[in-house]
Image 1 (cartoon, rainbow, N blue to C red):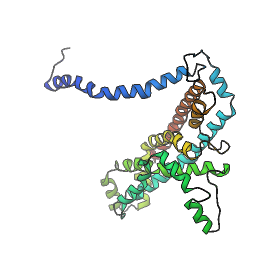
Image 2: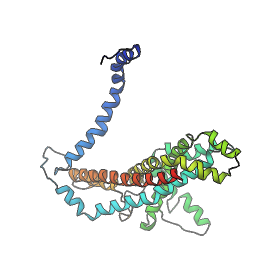
Image 3: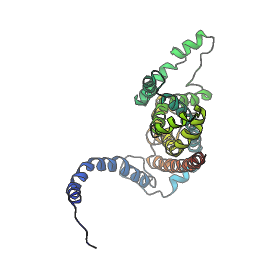
Image 4: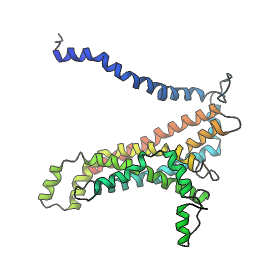
Length: 306
């Protein structure tokens, strides 16, 4: 078979070197800051290395065995999973409800409200953590000042082991709700207005349009939005580190903070062990996202069928 070279194909072939040239910075940065650290962490996880000095004796599976026998490792896994189980469903559902209201063109100040929800997303997480330490301070923070005037408190939101984790989850929920809201707003833009108008003309109520048009057409987006939300929720290091540092009494010790402590905050850093825990966290992330994707797809298929 003879291949016919068209002018369009010749132009595409001529532009191909320029495409790779423009992609080169992204490829180099992605390889240097994503691919290489991931591969290096896997290798370091098999070493008995403190992170300093040339001596890096091979330890085999010893770091992984140590992690599985460490109660603090399992404590950090439990805290991380609890944050996911509590915040992700609430965040996805509340963001969906807000998106449906804010997508209504008849709602006054809809753009202002969208901006208000999204402003915390663009703020630096570490700065939010530091500011929240002041806002929630039991001695002179404005929240406890208001509670004191109401005869409630003071409440040690970050110093009480029974309240610290829920406080961190609340701040994290508020910080990232706007991002999930934007996901749903983008999904709602894919629903043609003609379909909604036709249903309205045919006499369908708002509830019927939501049940039979909006929800089925949003079903394919459930899986991807849920997965994105889970991944973002597992990346909670900076907020926890600045607000509680994993305390009090390890009540907010998420796995990312535990890795940081083992690598940098102990008297004798355990870089190899921290790398092993990082690899296990990566595997856990894949498992959690995979399970969530399967469940979300099943829910999406049922919604689409309806």
